[in-house]
Length: 221
Image 1 (cartoon, one colour):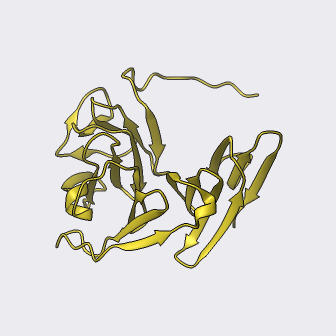
Image 2 (cartoon, rainbow, N blue to C red):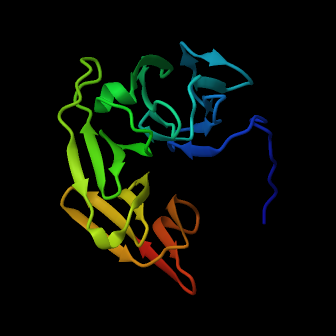
Image 3 (spheres, one colour):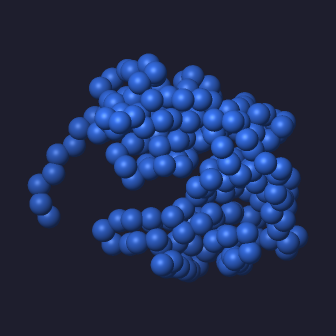
């Protein structure tokens, strides 16, 4: 193996990290808020801490997902939010606007939520996910809610994740990979653990699913 070096980027507590693949990494730090490490782009309109570390929001953050340079901040104990940014002519990033969960969905329910491309997903109850499409950032336009309903045998919906090949929804007795509103696959069984490898040296768009005594590996192209 070749030589490598390590550098400390952040010494605050973080419960979840995520990358947009463009040099930015989100750091969800609970009651301390949401931060972003930006290696190769300046961010205007935000408080800066250590070098290349910016505070996106002072509100509680459980996890965060990207849509290009925009960030959806998910909180399971308070209001989640969508933080929007504009890219300037010199490729700097400028904070533009924030939409709260209540503004997007019309009410607060403190269930897990996430963004995938131009849609925001939120668990509504044990077998439904509500979906809001983002049509126009500047006009605060979120059309009527769509509902994704899951069959009862899958059990309660637990969480969801945005991936390059679609969204992965974890239920009590199945994983559901949704490529679109009408295209999906069910992975039945009581899953112990699962992980997505979007783009690494050994794997590309892989979903690894661990059961009690075996593992299944799915590859998506």
